[in-house]
Length: 247
Image 1 (cartoon, one colour):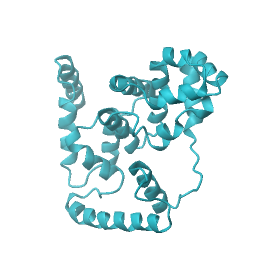
Image 2 (tube, one colour):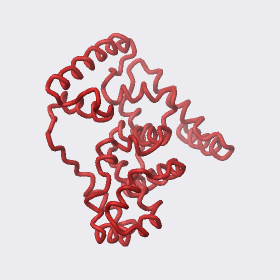
Image 3 (spheres, rainbow, N blue to C red):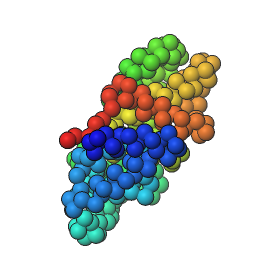
């Protein structure tokens, strides 16, 4: 039996006896022991499995380029990053793009935009179009209802796609979504939005105004969040395929 076959067998066994994630955690620990972290493998792992909370911050920082792949450089680079954060935040305040009252999620977005030379006054997001496309595939009747109520263009797209569901989903569910975003799959946001609509279809179909629909979607019940994210990941795999480790 090959090493890959053994790993697959153990993964299935652990899942059947109620210890799903044990084998994945061991695999991640092996990846993190490399002197030079393999960002491609870390990226693929993050897209396939939920990251263990104890390693999430480290993996996110490496995938986002905040920390380099080399372990020995982490402490010094992190010190420079803290200085960089202070400088960029100060610059944004000087030009009055953010203030002490600006939501933290928006501050982070503006900092990224400033550093990457993409600081628009009126940002636009292409994800709503993809959202309508996949919602139509999953439930065309629901999309038609949204359009008939004039709700489609007024859905909480900023909350979903600009803030990446921060303030919409509880932290435990949000982390699972951001694992995929950080590893390069922003499209997961589209499927989370689609699944929210599918999960609360009966409620949404009973509402007949854009204002009521938007207000409800901005404050969805929190007890369904984990199930929504799990189903959204299944939808993502269904339409976009399942990432595989490169050899």
